Image 1 (tube, rainbow, N blue to C red):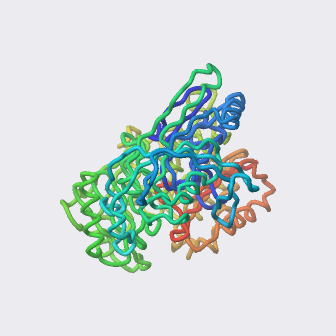
Image 2: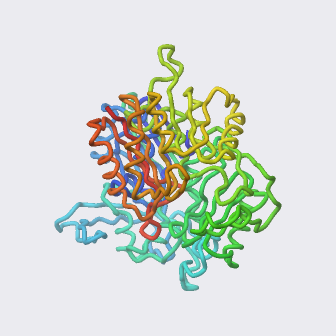
Image 3: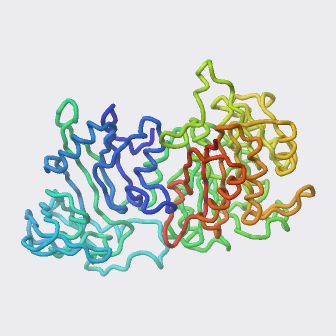
Length: 558
């Protein structure tokens, strides 16, 4: 289970939401919110209901109902105000009183809320504040290494070098209530620039404790989540959602979303891989050194991002050692409990695309989304092995996951070297590659051949490169030719089968990508029975400054 899990039984799910993640998706294509990510992760969480919400930059305890009766009970408790909520906050402003209560009416004004007298029109809001620490605390905006470029670190005056910690107990549950009331009393929360707070690496507001009565037993239960406001903002987001024993490969810095425009860093087991369009500068080297210490990494590599991969040799586009000790020719990482072989010596790509981790997990668990499973369990004696076609298989990561779940896989790729690499990945996970099919050749050509042979597959995976060229099919450009590719795959997709379509073409809007797929399906008169769209996983955070690039959709067709 993800480390964010605090408590679970048949009625409740209690979690520790990390800062930087919306409670629910702000729009259809803007990335999964915390609720969406949880609800689609486990079959038993498919009926989760949102009972409370936390702002994107607020962290802490959240409770979800798992049954209709639990939802009614929790909703009633929150409505009556019998749920006790304790928040912690930091401010770098003076707070004159030790304990006090703020009452007002809140009125929305654009993206903010403003406070009016409690007799004015608006939503009544009441918050109790109490200073917890008499002595001043170091300001994390000044004292912590928060992993941002100097040009983007907060600019604070020397007078702002000390902080006060307060406890806030909202007696009502209004949007932005604590933030508005703190600002009204002259001590805006550190990092809450929307309400006049000093810029920092995060909004220093945390839901530390929640007390309620169990919806069935009526027993009083208290759930707590610790917080370290001095920790860098991006670290808790990754550690909350990544099981350390199962996965040691994920994105650590995702460009502008993490305060480093144009720079991307992945953790790959014992090594780090940095990417940018130029050599590492002094600040990036310092940050890479810090990350090496944090992860006890043996070495760090840097790769130049280039559009001219096809014209360069493998040596020219392979990552180069930046610090630490060199990696062996081949090394192993863990993902979702499986092992995969990577290499820094095989060219531009190292062997696994981390942004497809959650989709590989969907194959591994046979669970795509809430109420959307691929097929019956392989433990069911009545079920036959799933037939899975992995086109553009690369090193067969999708195939390994499908095979581990009991499927029989067919992997097609234009590189013999990559298919041999894929076979080694099978062997790493105690599976005999001889029991699966590996086809060297052009995908478009083989889709036609398989159709002539009347082969049928339960799942077809289409994740083509944005550009490719083969002697058989000529030039393939994803925005122009994806529809043709999907059309060629449909004749060999079994009725009721699942088509997975994916592209990382950053400039192709998701609406156009999905419309192109539906246009390709329409002439076949095959109805889309189920659909689940997801962009990149949460360790590739989406923001205005770092928009989504990955588009993936699972479709069950009639």
